[in-house]
Length: 231
Ligand SMILES: [Zn+2]
Image (cartoon, rainbow, N blue to C red; front, top):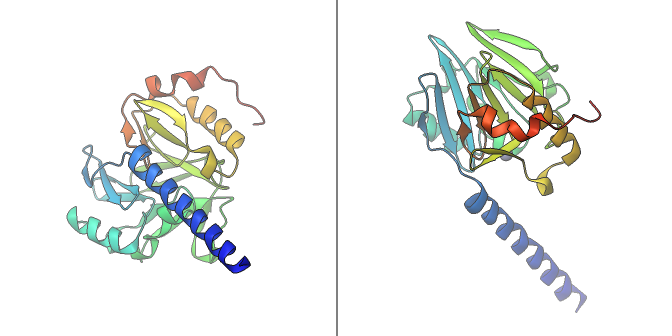
């Protein structure tokens, strides 16, 4: 009898998880399809996540690695990118929907935010808040934006393109916090949003699950007037 009860509880829990993910994906995730979105930026749709490739002349950086290795391979082929030519990958955080495709970039330096919990950490590079890296002529600045996960980092590229991972989502061109119920520390996440709200001259904000905005000032306006706490 007890055994049946446990089975029923497990089925109910699994059903809730499946419905929860379906709701997230179908109702709240608004992914961009694979293809160029600006002269410099290619978007890759890999499962439930968007990955971005920023290019300038011969130089190229990748932000995140997507939901699956197979998906990454297939989508990179669509935009004629050979994984071995990628020299640098910047990962916003350690969740599998951002890291599952990492091993395809066999020749790349891979970067995480400083406090990220990663297995085989000796294989990776860890960036402090405000660390700056040059990949050829591309300038990448790490901005520590914890909350969704420990070590979550956003990347500001060439002073104008902000790749925010799972810090925020965009809804009707307004910045909203990423989902509270799947984030580690919601208050910390709110402070991280207030931190990016202080950035000037952002040309584009690019999220991992809800598209991008070319109207950063308008989208983030509400967050500029709120005072950061505990920072
Ligand atoms: Zn994610």
